[in-house]
Amino acid sequence: MPGIIVSYVRGVEAVNWFFGRIAVYLIFAMIAILLWSSISKLPGLTPSLWTLEMAQFLMVAYFLLGGGYSMQMESHVRMDLLYGRWSQKRKGFTDTITSFCLIFYLVLLLYGGLSSSEYAIFYGETSYSSWSPYMWPVKVVMSFGIFLMLLQAVATFFRDLAAARGMTIEGEPLDDGNGETSS
Image (cartoon, rainbow, N blue to C red):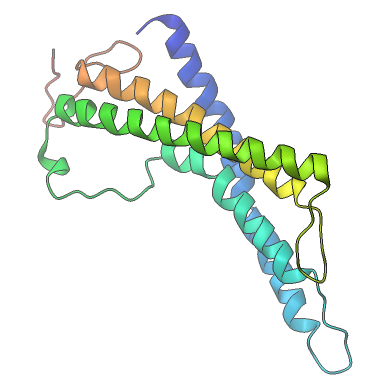
């Protein structure tokens, strides 16, 4: 693969790794907020209005900021009925097609996310709950997370394209798992 593609893949994977590692710790913030929500409902205390909605916002950030990271780590769900027996080239070819479909979907999702974020910022959209927080922060985080997933999907596409050609992204031949390289 050309050096610019290798640099792109490495750069995107470094950025997604960074944000993914940060997103991993959002689960502790969610736990703390939900714990406070439970404690605030004890007799004599005033229940907090903001806790459940804030936990939902953090879940959105956790899910979307970690999306590119989970793609990079290949920790997503994959139906492995036939796929596991295929050669690396065949897996790469199939993954190239599915990566292209994913990129198309993420472009449409990003367009909708940016449109929704713009609306929320321009009109000062708030939630319909009694807490009524502004919606633009969570929508901007959503759009950013979708953007990171799109960048990772393109990087994954390049990795899959290299695998379909029997190579790694760095241009080395693939190891088929039996100690032999495919040429």
